[in-house]
Image (tube, rainbow, N blue to C red; front, side, top):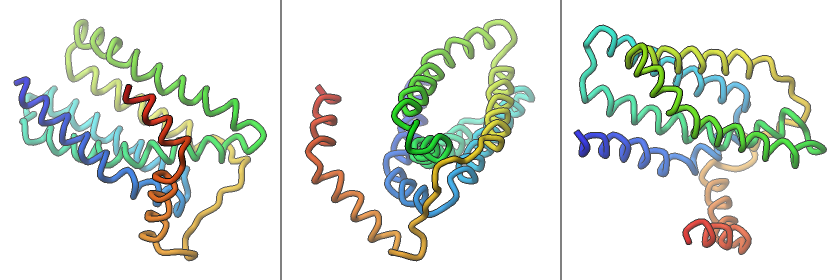
Length: 188
């Protein structure tokens, strides 16, 4: 069981790592609110599907690998889009205050989500935790649709090829000392 959990987590993590650079390019080329709502809907559909499979006793290991793969790709898109969408929502004047609040909310969700999920599982059962996750994702999608856009949404579509944009982004990260310094501190 532990090896399978590791395999499922590795599947999601590898896909997240491999697709993240492409997701950043996608974030610059498409409407961010639409992308965010799409990935949130995918996450909601996955949670509700898994809840139904667990509730009916139909869940199988191979399905978890599929959910992990789709979730890894969806989350690789969600992360850069969410960061850029903060600017779109608040504009240049407030972005310095909004980014830390957004990061704090994400960190809080990651820290408290498993605690609440554990409580739900303990009191009501596993499928209920997935139903709650799906419902909360749908709520997040609805709330995202209601956020006004104050910043200027710019896209790179039509100007350069996606491969050129990706290459430029990777060169920027590799050549920016402040980003390398931040990475060195994180790995220590």
